[in-house]
Amino acid sequence: MNIEITRIGRDQKETFLNLYNLYLYDLSEFTLEDPTNSGVFDPTNTYIYLEKDELHPYFIVNDSKIIGFILVCASPFVPEDVDYTVQELFILKKYRGTNIASITVEKVLGQLSGKISICQLAANQRAVAFWKKYYREHHIDYVETRECIPIDGLEGLQEVISQSFEIQRTC
Image 1 (cartoon, rainbow, N blue to C red):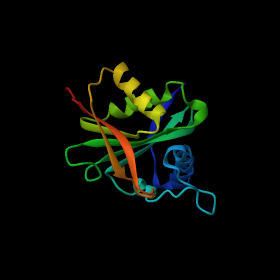
Image 2 (cartoon, one colour):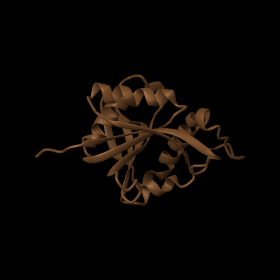
Image 3 (cartoon, one colour):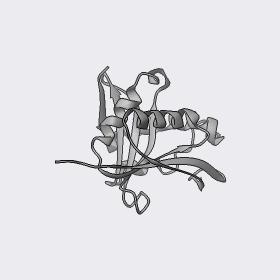
């Protein structure tokens, strides 16, 4: 297993949106979202990740194969008291449970410093469990909150769980 994270370029938009559609399909179990009449899920404004310097989209690559993505946001796309958010983490099902997600997060967080916030849909217990296990295994102290928020493209409010923590960089 050779895990790399590579920044997603504008020329990779189609690949990114194809994977994002699979991600939305997975999430539909929790969001109750339906695909459009053309059979795909509405990616809303996802393409913006490829256009703004403050948004950091990465492909997750295993042995030269793109197997997922992780999306990181910085100001002005984060709350005022936060430096970065990990917005989305997606790995193809056949690669789940292989520690790839943990390796990916470690590589991404290793590039960041400051206050980090990570949010999951409360109904997505697998994601919630993953993040709590990651924090425990990496000795990360976090503050957790729960709230109901609107999410672009979804009806009503969605219950989310957020964890915030600090990453200090030493010279």
